[in-house]
Length: 340
Ligand SMILES: Cc1cc2nc3c(=O)[nH]c(=O)nc-3n(C[C@H](O)[C@H](O)[C@H](O)COP(=O)(O)O)c2cc1C
Image (cartoon, rainbow, N blue to C red; front, side, top):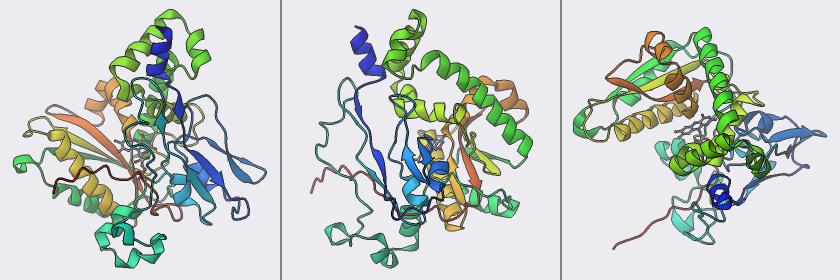
């Protein structure tokens, strides 16, 4: 029984890992600062991977690869759950990740060798990364409005346009939201997210049960990659919730929309994100923003103005990137069933 619970919550997993070419590395430390899981540390002038506990590992986002100015970092391997309910080794065995292959097998190996054959839109799509290195400099209001303008022209079911926006540039509100999130995460993660198997066994029965119920009922919310991302935000954080971005745009969804309001609003968000990168800005979606919204409803209503029929959908951290952050990285291949 305990074993099957453990497999649902902290299943045996094969994690990706980060490899550093010390000859090429100039010790700038950008990779350490950008890693959302905060698993990289500088040792003797070079980054090394260090794990605080079992599941505190690389999620293959390649943020470190993207920001490295000397191309010294390579990420190897994919996230694979080896046993239990969420095993994913047998679905597409032997698959490897690749750089974008817009020309199929005729695509050259290096992105630089075919970048100029891409359309402007493809270039932004392939090179956009979630950025976690922001300058302090504020984004002018006109630029923020211009980003939102691209959201406004997203497709939506029945053209219902079920979105609205809250643009936050007041540092006090941003700091307040960070503090509220850290406080709540501390409580939730401390209560319900054992950090490894030994920790799980050591926990009192009610915490074991809580972790188990969450693991079985809400796997997406306690997926070990998300859980350790949350832990990174409050425990060893040099980031804070909004990663130092000077602007945060909340995107709200209108519950009165037609059909799939979530899909409509996600399309709106992606339009905004791509437009921002095409303008030389940087973005990162902040899923954990739902924590202060959920646990401080009065603050959400009074200070942020989130009222029915609108509901919080997501937050976009926005700012100018510190150095080069956008770059094409590898992704798992498309799983396509052709019917021709
Ligand atoms: C819905 C959603 C929520 C996310 N939340 C966070 C977050 O809270 N913090 C963070 O650093 N990155 C967050 N991300 C960014 C993902 O980690 C990132 O998209 C993923 O690793 C792929 O990397 P890329 O965006 O550079 O391609 C989020 C992304 C999405 C789509």
